[in-house]
Length: 252
Ligand code: CIR
Image (tube, rainbow, N blue to C red; front, top):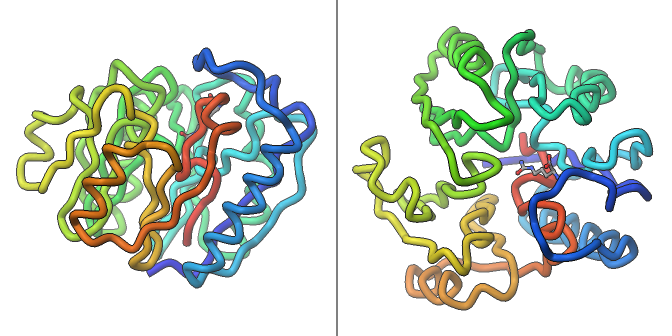
């Protein structure tokens, strides 16, 4: 169960962030409205929200997930692999120390929270352009002190691990073809996310409700068959900036 989410408003330079999507420039006002709806959805799942003001120095800073990995015991402050995002962590430290003891990923290790998927006492850590071997093993070693295990998973065809695989409870895993046959996921009930709906691989389970991006019919149909209590959100402006549902918050 989660009790709280930490979010940060998109800043006015939001459209200057990093993106590989060829979906055009985001509409800032629409992004703000979608962000407001996202927060309302989290509240409807029972979360209290720590809503941080926009940080005009960092266009990608609304994607708070990348700045930390949080367990019941500790918040590990990351060292984002994207140079332009590296100092986003500075303002997050004072926020997160209110809730958890802190540990840090140190250079030359890099790590972004989008590469980290937790399933109870086990963490899956993606190796991507943003998270390197050093960062992944630093995180694994820190988590091991608190009784967690971890598996490192190379990812080639996506920004982050959780761009293409997400655990959604009840042993169900949303996963694209890149990781569908990965041995680390053999024991899961895997739901194959088709390439034309890849954005919907990033759904967010919060306290028995599943938040999904609107407009991805095949994935939605599969989830309805599994009787999920769904909340659909329009995420179009964040998709243009390579950001998914999980990226917009840190859950604790
Ligand atoms: C970036 O490229 O860093 C941002 N435009 C998107 C970050 C998305 N974060 C995530 O998947 N956890």
